Image 1 (cartoon, rainbow, N blue to C red):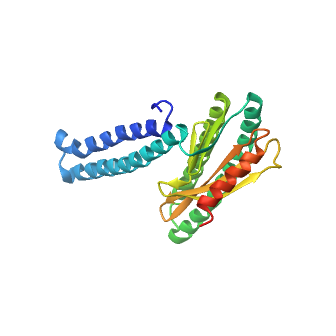
Image 2: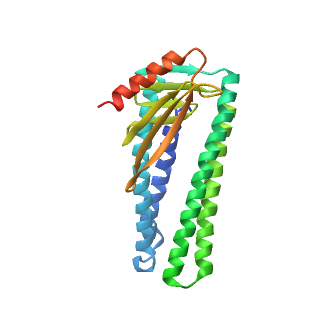
Image 3: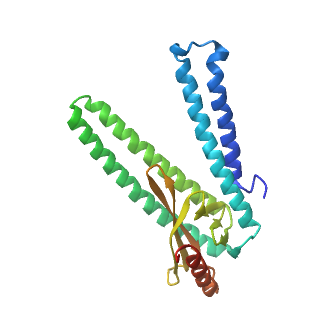
Length: 246
């Protein structure tokens, strides 16, 4: 698979560029003659931090790119489905509605937590209430914009591209979105087949990835084409037997 058709590899290349910028910033004080005690050390530390974060991202995205290559080459593929325009339109609208609900609930939760933490902090310091309010509103605004922008990007991607999905034992590639539940620290949390779901049956896959001190949780909702219900059940059974019955 080329770079254009492998989003994780393209992202890894972008991070390589960021790494180069970080390395340049490390040596920038020496290039411009900035003394370490006049900000040179701080600038170099910032560059080092950027470079380290970029290296970590490069490793992760290159691993994801390799996983995607194996999936699209149909290595250990359980099923490949390509949807009709009508089937994909139904999925796109239902997914957008469900995704928007989840993002709204998460935004409300973060808002409540931010306000609560802001109140606790103000009770502790009893000073600069306008600054605290500004910080809380800033967090809420950034969270809201990020949730709206990412949801809109997913919706536009689904409307722009006719859907297809590759499902393997360890991951799925659903319309240019890679879901991995084995490798890079990811873990399958659960998988079900909702045969009676309307407007179309679907496979629900819940998985998690490592985060600082916890895990981030994700859900992939994969529509099942008409007449493929029995195959969908076998897919769920195969993935369950490998990842959840140990």
